[in-house]
Image (cartoon, rainbow, N blue to C red; front, side, top):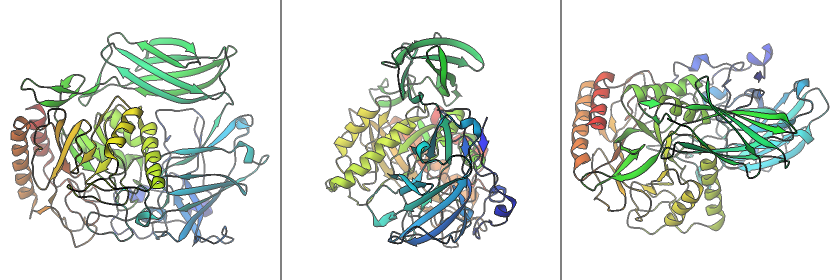
Length: 589
C-alpha cells in the first residue's frame, strides 16, 4: 500500500504554473494533489511509503543569511524553482540559498520502524533539518541520497522538514551538464534544488540495504549480490524468480557472504524487439520469520564487442551484431526544465522513439529519474548513458585538463554514484564519461575506474574528439555528416552525434530566434535530407565499418530547432511511418 501525502484545499488554491511560455499537453494536468505519484524506485520496491511531493513553503535568501523567518510562498516539488511548473520561475544563483519547508505526519503503523528520508535528486549541495535539528548534507546534482531520520522525529503529531540548497551552476566546477547562468545556443536554463521525488519509507531495523544483479546468458544464470543492515549468523535470503506470474525458481542462501548464482533453464533474453523481464521477490528471514521484503526485476542480456566476417569490430547484443541507431536525448522540457511534467509525459518521449524505429538513445550529459530507465527496460530501448559534464574544455589536440584534487574527487564520487544507482538496468549498455572535451581529465584512469565499478557494459571514453586510444568505442561527431572514424583494430567505430537538421515550427517553438546545424524550409525537405543521411550511413556501415550512430536529437531544446519533435512534443516533424522505414532499413540492412 502506498501512503500518499495530501494537500489541503487552501494549499491547492495557492499554486498555479508561473506563466509557461510554451506549455505541453501535460502542463494542465499537473496539480499539487497529484504530482509524480508513482513509486520512484521500481527496481528496489517496498509496499509502504509516503510521497512528499506537492506544495512546500519556499524562500530565496542570501547565502550568508540564517534560516528564513518568513516564507515567500509555495513551490511545487519536484519541479525546479526556475521552471514554470514550480509556480515560482525564479533564478537563484551562486550567492543565494533556496530554502524549502513542509510538515508531515506518519502512520501509527510505522511506530516501530526506522524512517528513511529519500531524495531522488537535488541540484546541488543539499542540507536537511528535521524538527530543527540538522540531519546531514549531500553534494551532487543527479544521484539519489537518503538519511535515517528516526532519531530526529517527535512523538506523534506533525514533523517539520526543512531543506536548503546551494547551486553554483557554471560558476562552480561540479558536474552540471548543459546548465548555464546565461542560456544561449547549445547551453540551457539552469536547475536548482529538488527536481526529483522526495519520499519517506518505513523499514525494519534488520533489512535489505542493497541488491546488485548480474546476468550471464552464456551459462543461463543470474547472480544476486545482497547486503543487509544487521546480518545474524542464521539469517538468510529467499529469492523467488517469476516469469510473469509463474514462479520459475525459489532459492535460499545465507546473508553472509550474501551472493548467489541461480540457474534459469531456457532463459528468455532481453533485446529491443523482445524486452523480456523477469520479476523477483526477495525476502530476508531472521529467526525463521520474514523481517523484510523487496521487489525487483532483471533482464537477461549481454553486451560485447565481436568481429564480423570481414574482421571489423561490431557491437553485439546477446552475441548477435546489432547496428545501434537512436537520438541524442537531452531531457529538457519547456514547462519543467529538468523535470518532465509527469511520468506519462516522460514515457511519451520513449514511445515516440520506439515508434520511429530507433533501437537506442544516448542520454546526453544528464541522469534521469529511475523510472526513465524502468520504461527503457520495459519498452526495449538501449541506453548510452553520459556522465553530466563539468567546467573546463580541451580541443582535439590539447592534453587532458589538470583538475584540482577536490574537483576530481567530486566528479569521481558523482560518477560512481551514477553507476551504482543505475547498475541493475538492462537497458544501459554503454557508459560515456566525457563529451567533446568538456571537463575531460585523466581519461585513461577514469575508464579504469568505470571498469572497476562495472564490467558488464562498454565504455565510450570520449564522445566527439580528444581520443586517447582507450575504452571500447572510438567516437566522432559530424554535423550534419554523416562520417565514420578511421578503423581501430582494438575498438568499435561509432558516430556519437550527427544530423541536427533544423526546422522551426511556428507556435511550437521556445523563441522566434531558432537554429539548427542545417536549416530546412519544410517537412518534406527535412525528410528528404534525413533520407540522404541514412543512405550515406548505410554505406559507412559497410565501409569503413560504422557500428552505431546517434542523431541529434529527440526534441527541440530552447533555441535549438533540430529535434525530431517540437519542444512542446506536439508535432513529429517528419512522417512517422517514413522515418521508421528508413531507420529500420539501416538497422536490419
